[in-house]
Length: 153
Image 1 (cartoon, helix red, strand yellow):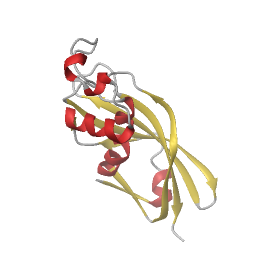
Image 2 (cartoon, rainbow, N blue to C red):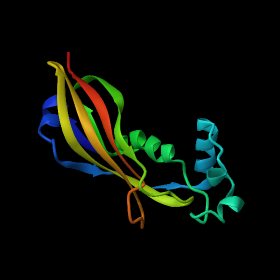
Image 3 (cartoon, rainbow, N blue to C red):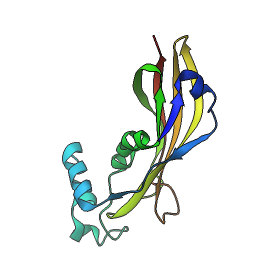
Image 4 (cartoon, helix red, strand yellow):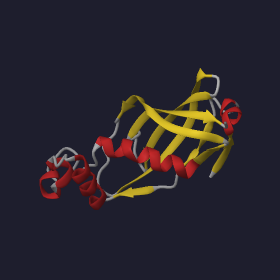
């Protein structure tokens, strides 16, 4: 776990690799749970028998599932100290270059791509998030996540 020293610490890290998470396994139980939570029960996600004859050869995780794990995996990689409030502000440029077959191992790699200063006491960090799959030719997900950090009062 990397500790970043407040807004000045963020300013000093623009353009740098911040770190990588541990690998997590996306199994069929996790895919089914995500299907229930998202109300998306498309057969390519939830029907292993039918999905076996799909171009993927098995069920695959929802693209949104690959995106949804980013927030939790970020918490394994770093923490910004000396802030009074942190808000998830949104995503930019989200793509799903590679399908995630059931049983795949994924991890998050994150860089601090950009820092914007919307106010004297706040910064918007643009985190370049790449969800890698073990043995994948391309990432499962690439997204720029915006987080707003307010400095200490």
